[in-house]
Image 1 (tube, rainbow, N blue to C red):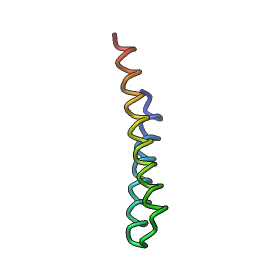
Image 2 (cartoon, rainbow, N blue to C red):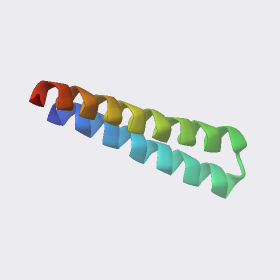
Image 3 (cartoon, rainbow, N blue to C red):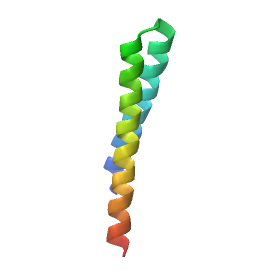
Length: 58
């Protein structure tokens, strides 16, 4: 996994956490859901990149 891909995944997860927090503060269910989705997408991409790395290491 390249450093750029790692950074993008971490940024997406961080943005998701922030969106979720703002949604909770403003009681905005759509924003909470969007934040959770962004976090899940970032985590899934990171797992995909880890799997790619594992294949390349063998």
